[in-house]
Image 1 (tube, rainbow, N blue to C red):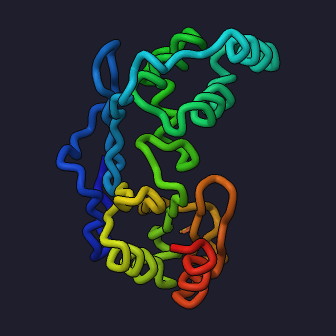
Image 2 (image 1 turned 135 degrees about the horizontal axis):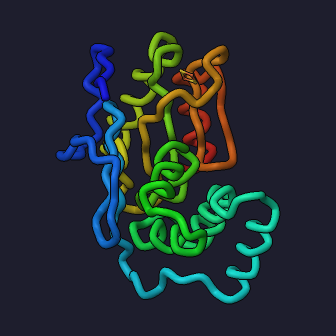
Length: 205
Ligand code: FES
């Protein structure tokens, strides 16, 4: 897969940027999109990565909504993330097993959408878009401001766990760039440095 060049290195601090789009049982799954490399991380307490009977019943209800079992993957990933906070290697495996899907297919869905967290995130998670439209409208200035202010890089969490940062690909709001996604519940369009500072202050950050 080609690596986009935009004058900014887009480094995410991950040493391994190799392109492995597969994942056999028991292996970490790695995938590179050029600017960002994703890989599953192990859960701190793997024994806790299980669905309850109630959750399994809910999954069956999801599955019943679709002609194919695997079509429920986004709902089940969401359920898993709501429960565990992020999608670990064990969680991907659990979702795959519950839907009788290959782990790599589940990971493919999880890695495509920024709303699925592939690693732990802070209480407030900021995803700053730096794709073309946002880059041209100051996306990197905003992204770099957060990095410099909180001394964190792409994928990092502040030591107090309050804030995490992600350099995002296009968030689908190019006409109102630059764009900031806050966790999975807010989008701030036409972002400016003043707007960003006000938002951070309001959040007590
Ligand atoms: S390029 Fe940033 S939202 Fe599309």
